[in-house]
Amino acid sequence: MADTGLVETLLRRLEKADDGVDSLQVSSGLGVDHQLIVGAVKSLQALGDVISAELRSSKHWELTGEGAEIAEQGSHEARVFSSVPPEGLPQSELMKLSFGKIGFSKAMSNKWIRVDKAHEGGPRIFRAVESIEDQVREKLLLLQKGDSQLEEKEKNELKKRKLLSEVTVKSYWITKGSSFSTSVTKQETELTPEMIANDRVQDLRKEDTEKPPPIKGDESKVEDSVLKAGQDKTTGGSWKEKKFKPYNFEAMGVAPDCGHLHPLMKVRTQFRQIFLEMGFTEMPTNNFIESSFWNFDSLFQPQQHPARDQHDTFFLSDPALAHEFPQDYLERVKKVHSEGGFGSQGYKYDWKTEEAQKNILRTHTTAVSARMLYKLAQQEKFTPVKYFSIDRVFRNETLDATHLAEFHQIEGVVADYGLTLGDLMGVLHQFFTKLGITKLRFKPAYNPYTEPSMEVFSYHEGLKKWVEVGNSGVFRPEMLLPMGLPEDVSVIAWGLSLERPTMIKYGINNIRELVGHKVNLQMVYDSPICRLDS
Image (cartoon, rainbow, N blue to C red):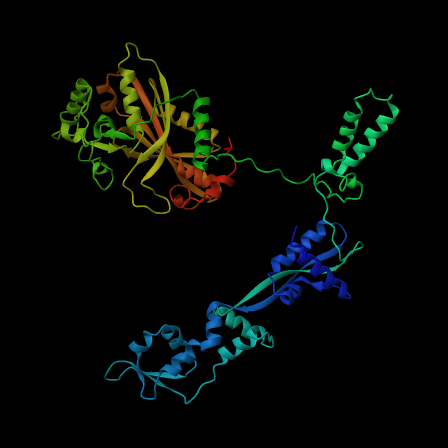
């Protein structure tokens, strides 16, 4: 409940008023914050019909910080005029003043000053009139004193200059209720044992008179029980005179303290569920550090490719190199890069083991796919598989509203006999339909380790245009055959980011509001469950 003294003061003021009082006037008269009076009103409303309060809105003009400064010191243009001596002032000197730039243009439009551009010392400013009248300051002073005689046009001009703002004030018109009283009795919220103790004493005594006389020596026990029940005679039975606060069955319970999933994790769970429904197996992606061999070379990506430069990739300094590789597989990769093989002429360059040994932060989860496909190739008999992964990757990107140096990649891989581009399109249609995306288009693209390759576009109903939603392709034989996979086995794959669909789902425009030190934890707390429109 609000401060009792403030509540009683408000009631006494209301008693003296004939029709009612305004909460703003009461707060002004008492010299207290208006919100304290509002709190007192709410407390009185909770007691029943003690008072009646009607919410009212009113608008008034208020000086901004700049407007208050002008009311005290004068307008920018008037201060510029005052700064110009009779012999003139160099324009460069005037522009150094805090009010110079704005005041100069206004004073020129008022024809208070003139500029001599032909002056031998450079452009010089002179007064064009003997004296001026600072009407802007006069208008602001009138408004500051509460005088509202200015026309709306004049007020709007001051508002346009950001010297004035229109403020909406909400207050309560308070009148006496049907149960009005200047004394307030606090309503009880709990029924305590002390309130009913006296009734219990009477019940015990009644029971005592109805029972046969106690056995000698037991009188003290009966008396003790009576005294124990009625030890607080001052409050016993007082519940009959108390007023109890009505129980609010509409009140919300206290929210339990618990952890909250980040929006990225909510969307990730939905994507993971879709892959599992389609019969995919999740790949182990717990190695953020990868060698250049598995990240680039095993994917038939040449060592001079721009993506392997330092401005695109994070290289590790310790440990800088990896040393454990399947040697026979490494030799086959080296050969297909430098000499060709398996029907390919290769890239015809000097492939270096030292370059393949360099440790990096993986730039894509396709490095994990390469490891899993190599492991699959080592089995005695090939079995078709469907793999997926959702995890973090790292690239040396320029940070902006849509790019971070760290993001999540979603990847799906299917390996089977005789898979074609038609199979890839069919799987993509099934996958994106489960995401609620049914309008798809495919555009030919280039990737070093897939051929053919396709960019996937979806029609965005909100933007009314086609937007890219992923990349896909069929892994090249130069990547698969050195691993030891059968020649008639094809592998189709596709990938997309996790951040972009999450930003679309939760209406986030800047990726730095989703990931990083600028994340608002309240956003994490308030974000709803993710349900994709499948």
